[in-house]
Amino acid sequence: MESSIIFCVMKVISFSKKPELNHPILIAGFEGWPNAGGISTDTLNFLKRGLEVKKFAEINPDFFHKYTKNRPHAKIEDGELKYLLFSPYEFFYKKTAGLSDLVLFLGKEPELRWKQFTRSFLKLANDFKVELLITVGGTYDYVTHRQAPWVSGVFTHSELKAKFSHLDIRAAYYEGPISIHTLLLQEAEKIGIKGLSIWGHAPQYLANNNFPIIYQILSYLKEIIGFELDLTELKLKAEELLRQIDLIIKKNPELSQYIEKIEKGNHLKKELSSYEKVIRIDEFLKKDSNYKE
Image (cartoon, rainbow, N blue to C red; front, side, top):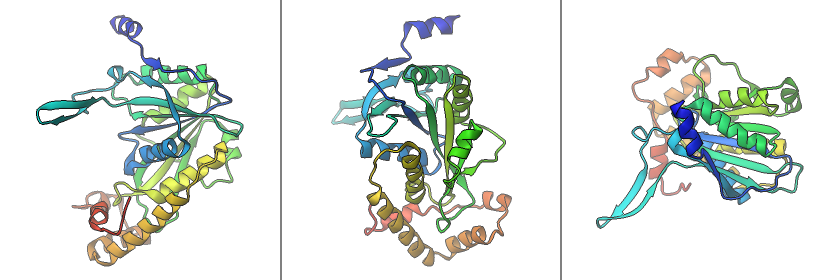
């Protein structure tokens, strides 16, 4: 009862405006556990920049965020507080020339009250008559940068899976701990919103800058939704990243052997999981003056 009273007194979602949207599709990304390789947040941030979206709503993080675990960020100069930032949970929109307008959400995966978060999130989606919810996630896998980008998907409807069967989104097989994506899709289906969860599979040795995977996911999203977005620069970054990684591997026998095990399929999950030091290529890339993000 006390929790319900608190939620009534404080607004869970606040709006700066309520845009008129045409058959909107909502794409959501989350920081945290479902953001391996930075795939989720990097994909959403690229969409935000490329589409020049406008913010229209935000979720109050006080209900869902544990500040003692992930603390607010501050900047202090010469003894003066310059700014204090709380983790944002923000909604953006973009009117498109296609059949569907676009809503984007970007925020941390909630640490508290998942069911309340899901109800609030989907109430906004339902109020704006969202027809399709797409979540974007990242997971580490036993893949290498030399393979074609591996993207898997979870569909709430078989007809949705059939509709996008021409895309190389592989049907996921999984049993274990879930992210907020799964709960959102399950509850969205109950209120008539179709759902698709797209997951990019990142090499274990690449902690971020997974440009080839992000490029692939954005290519799929362009085709699914039908919006215009220039991916030329991202494609060039992906090609340069692969070139730089191969140069690094040639100079690092230990890393080369690690990748060869994965490529040959001789790896055992137990062996690779207990690998004393999974080498991160990112540090090498930062040291290379020729490589720019």
